[in-house]
Each structure stands twice: as structure tokens, then as C-alpha cells.
Length: 265
Image (cartoon, rainbow, N blue to C red; front, top):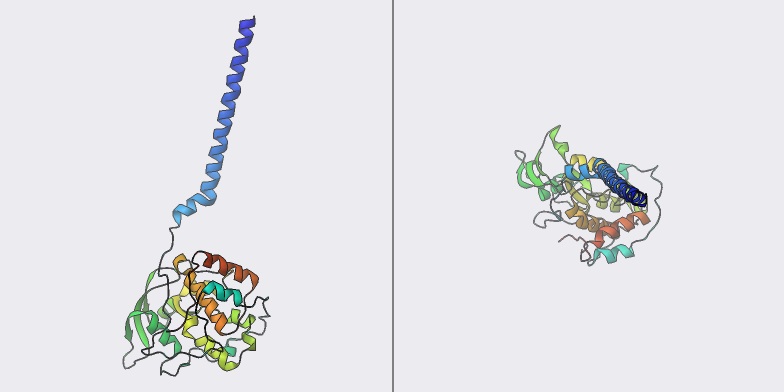
């Protein structure tokens, strides 16, 4: 009787151990399934976007700089960020694009309007329309925001594939100090080559008036340059940042502590 009872106890102990093992396996399977359907499959399905680490700024051979209220402070971008004022957003209810002057005028008086200046600066193998030394008809670029090689062809429908992005969006600038600038200063801000990048049309539309807290380029290799460019523009035009925006900029610059401000040269 005692032998039988001991055998029974061993059998129960082995049974409990088996159920524990089976339970642990079930938990692992459930966890792996949840991970796959919530995150894993998307990691596998979305390859990392790569592209240029910088975007063109200035070409002194044919461009002329505009004059901001303040010189872009040369040096470490993170240090300049620390010197920007931090405030909340002002109202956007009275924002109007016309407050920044006529779009794409010849602000630097080099004989070409700003849109064509930026297309010429950012595109390779540039072709001009017949009889013009300004109007860009076609060109190719390694687009900085999404990392794709893009062909620009002027046309009623095709031109919108490449748009000129205001690195510090004018709507964002209006809410963060541009209301206090003069019309001439706002016009310079809208046409300053430091604040302009030729970009994928869809990416530009997606960004809209977002700041760094709510939008960054999908091409992560550009983010340090992009954020430093925003900081440079805000410092040059006396604009402020919100606390979430500053925090987002600082997180980006943590990965590139040697990043410098962006100045036209």
C-alpha cells in the first residue's frame, strides 16, 4: 500500500510539472503571435528609409543671400537650441500666406524667382525651358525626405511631384514670433535658401505646418541636418520653440552631438 501511494504521488508531481511546461509554452506562443500581428510583421514589411544626410544650402555662383534680422549663429546646433526662447503657440486664426509677401518672387534680385533658384540648386542634370536661363524644365534628385531618386519634369500635373518645402513652415513661424517681424523680414524668411528644400510632393503635403514635435523626415539620416536647419532659421529670425518641439529637437541631436548649425556659404 505504501509503495502504491508513493508511486501515485510521483505520478501527480510529474503531471503538475508537465502542465507547468505546457502553460509556459502556451504563454510564449501567445506572446509571439501578439508581437507578430502588432509589430513584428510591420518591422519586416517596412525597410528602413535611407537617403542623403544633408540637403543643399547655397550656391554663390549664381545665388545671392537674403538678409535675416540676425546672423545664423555658427557652432554647435544643440547649444544654439538652448538659447532659443521657449513659449506656447500664438493663435493661427489670423494667419495668411500673403503676410510673407508674394510667393516665389525674386527676393535675392539675381534675375530668377525663388522656386526656380531652389530647383536649380537641388536638382542634377538641370534642363531649362527654351530661351530661359532661369525656368527649370527638368532634372533629377536624390530626394532628401523619403530617400528616393526623383525625376522632375515641368508640367501642369507633373510639377507637383517635387515641391519646395519651407523647413520652418510659414504657418509655424507665424505662431512663434513671425507676427512681430516686418513684412520685408517675413518675405526674406519665406525666400531664404536656408529655409527651403526641394522635396517629395507627398512628403511636403504630409508635413504641412508641422514642427519637429509632430513631423520628421522618414529618411532618418537627414534628421540631424533637418533639425539643425530649423534651429538655424529660428535663431536667424528670432522665432521661438514650444517645449515639445525643443524636446523633439534635443532627442534628434542626442544622436549627433557634433552637429553644427546650417549657414549659407
